[in-house]
Image (tube, rainbow, N blue to C red):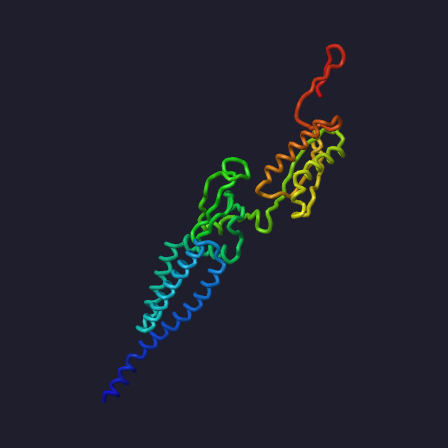
Length: 287
């Protein structure tokens, strides 16, 4: 009699037991997969903040998943799928509206961790903000600003926090993704009366003087291009130099070119000016 009552009790509660077993099994499988992903991300993490972010993020995902599985199992047990649909719709809409930017930011953080468009120490530009990355967190990218209000490649002393969701809204420029060298240029205008070949030689030698230490890394010598302008011959020298010292190298080359040309009699720098040349008595012409 007792045995038959026990069998009847199990039969009557079988749907509940199956629902509980289903929930535990699904949560167990998901926890195993999430743990594998968590261990992979922790191996890629570089800083304490990244490790903390990974742990927090995986914990949030686990809690959300458990809530959804329990709700699905509950509405399945009571046989009210309409209630589940209403709940899921309201929950998703509310969560999506409240956490739109944070969720987008987390997705951007995952992209940064997995795809590595930049790393800590890289010099980057996001939108119109540029600098060197010194930290990457779940919500923000931290940058030591370069330049800022001053047109310079030096640190401005200001720290900028960029929300991660902006990574999907702006172009990302990484100056040091593959190496630390970028293309620079110095432009010199010389008069049409100047010795062009000598001017080209001076400009190229001046650039080589300040980038020769980098030639082993870049394997690219300076290149010279010449254009005819309305009142001058424009000589451009292009070269590769470290992004962090580009303005210093450009300044040194410019000064070297100026000093050497000033010593030459048959090479003259062109600049806008007016000369008055007198010809005969009371007559003059502009040049």
